[in-house]
Image (cartoon, rainbow, N blue to C red; front, side):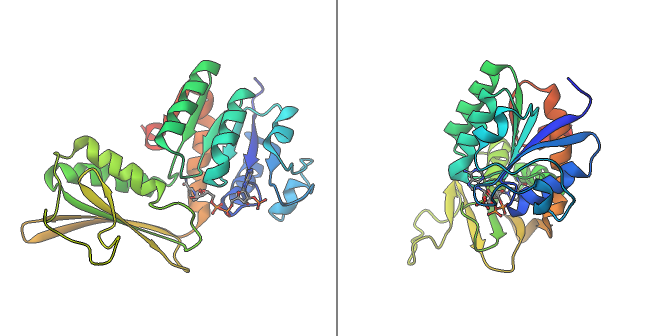
Length: 267
Ligand code: NAP
């Protein structure tokens, strides 16, 4: 293995993908070897991010991109409908997947873990690469041990495809692992407008707000006798995810099997 890590970026023309291309080009320890965008055309990847030519021409498909790339790692920020195919294809080529795309099902994640193990390579699926968001999830899980009445409200832009967000599902899973079993609320409660109480997850509720102007926020609210506790995280820009993606690209080289959650890389 050469000293630089060769990286393929899938969804390179997207909002997150462009940040990843920029991050890779700015780190001497990384080398951009492939970029995929179904609609950008065969342009140089540098043009996607306003940088000089890189010598990497954007490909329309992942197969075309990985065939002769020699990539060690691929980073995928695309759409839920494409992410499973992209990930399984990368694994088939022996390229370690780092998946930021949200919306993969637990069954798909399980299957991808199996494929990684069969191939003997590492991979990561992370619904959130931001360090503050990981801390918000950890603190929320801790609080739920003492204040088990909880609801999650997550806020994203109105063009987001999946609801609830991957981060809110991950938060709910972490809470469920440590919270005492409890079905909250009035057992006779009735919704006069369908969905008013949000999505049901293991005894508590998740609410998804979708509005233009919003980027990514989440609040976890705990209720107790005469008090509430709110744990809140606000993301303001996509560049804030890049230190996490950079760390993942480097650490995934040393793992075997698929890791789910960026928190496992922070220990
Ligand atoms: P976006 O701007 O809409 O970009 C998505 C890109 O996916 C588009 O540029 C599109 O390419 C590309 N695409 C669609 N189908 C494809 C395929 N079959 N193969 C390759 N590329 C394909 O979305 P975004 O805001 O960057 O978000 C992308 C994903 O990241 C979403 O699932 C979002 O929830 C997630 N996300 C995760 C984190 C995290 O920390 N894990 C943070 C933010 C967002 P064309 O432009 O060429 O059509």
